[in-house]
Length: 257
Image (tube, rainbow, N blue to C red):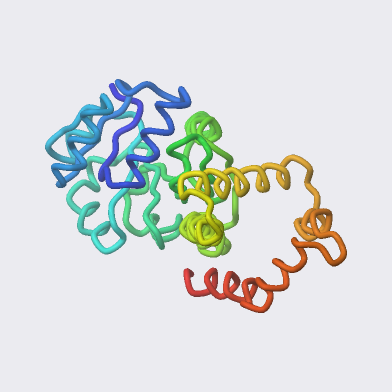
């Protein structure tokens, strides 16, 4: 019996599998899955994950089922396997499908939880949001939570905050990659080799985030510590403010919901 069975193995599911294996949450031989895409199947096989032809086989062979399909097909996927999921533990990362919605879709005997990961889970630095309301047993909940914690950080949120939290941590990596790219482009324009520029920008983002998390100091205060009166940093800050960077990021979160 596999610990985890994935119904759908796209980019996000692959990132979760990679993070779990890399950080020792489970071994590759503890995971199986199915996906219509041959490319997804090959990625899983290369990772040491067992691949089955259909969802029913995945369910029958697994202790906990990951629902990892697109929102537009989830109801079509679940309908024919509803009976197979009876008395099973299901964890879903399908956008827009919370505890209440699954209560109407699944049998009353199916225990379920909704979570929202992000792609940095692949390298063990994920941010995983877990919906506060769930029906897993304590043992099941503690197990899946511990797996997520090995591959990143976990935040438990009430149902009504899952969408905004997901916009921030789920979409946020794309915004931060744009920041990294833009910072690097600025340095390249002034003569820094591109690979060095990417390294400097990425490490600066990584270190800055870690410093805020570990110290708990307000980001504004940390910014002020770097900005000397009349110095180069405050001139750069002024340029960013002229470009309405704060408003742009706030609008990005609002549009992503």
